[in-house]
Image 1 (cartoon, helix red, strand yellow):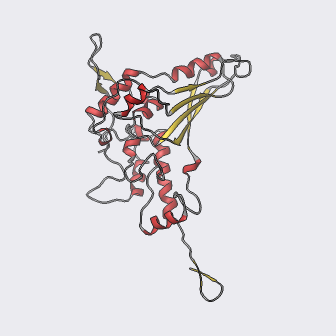
Image 2 (cartoon, one colour):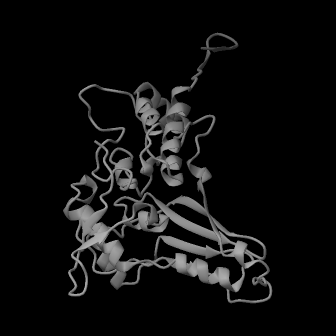
Image 3 (spheres, helix red, strand yellow):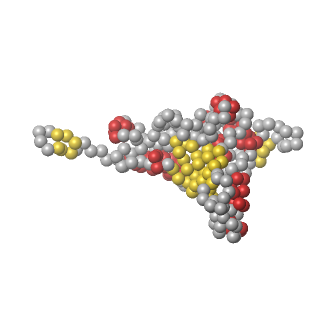
Length: 296
């Protein structure tokens, strides 16, 4: 039911010198491209790269809650008024000149690849998250943050073989989304108690707010490459009902390539841990009846 992203997709625009189909190597699609194609992005993304002499290039991949209106029909309008990007690529600490070029190349995107993949999701995949979404005219570029090269932020190359390697990223969630001891994943104890007695388990990525409705948010929309047809998510109705915990147990045992990735494991694991923090809740109440307090 989940399926995999196809190896060949149609190009959104036919050029005389190109073949009508694009061959897609799914493992070569960058984290940043996966972020840009997702129909729902309840978080903004920051990619921080570091390097230096005798060091390989490595980075961090962080999630922050942010307003993400630049999808669908409003994307073209935002580009026309130069609205700020929700993606930032930052250069931190000392790096060699060659490492700066490597990071700059990793921050570049193939505009045609982006439009071809998005066109596939909109016109062919049947993914519910892309229903009625128009194809944008241009590519949403991320912001590249760096200082001018100086002696304080530039290292001399000492071992080119090591310094040219890219070690990949470290994935982490914003601590604002972590469950707390007293309120689990809710904003206050009152919301927590109401959800607990109403059996409203927190299975989603956000606790609400202005940017994402927790009742409508689906992991299939946040991870479209893991669920390329929008099917197989934990909230999907099934002929034989199973719990969300059983769904996550199944995801973590799959040998499919899209489920053996840092970003997918991070998000699914975060959702699973939110359920556990809620399921293990212990509620106490204090009453004063003719004397000392009584706990129940």
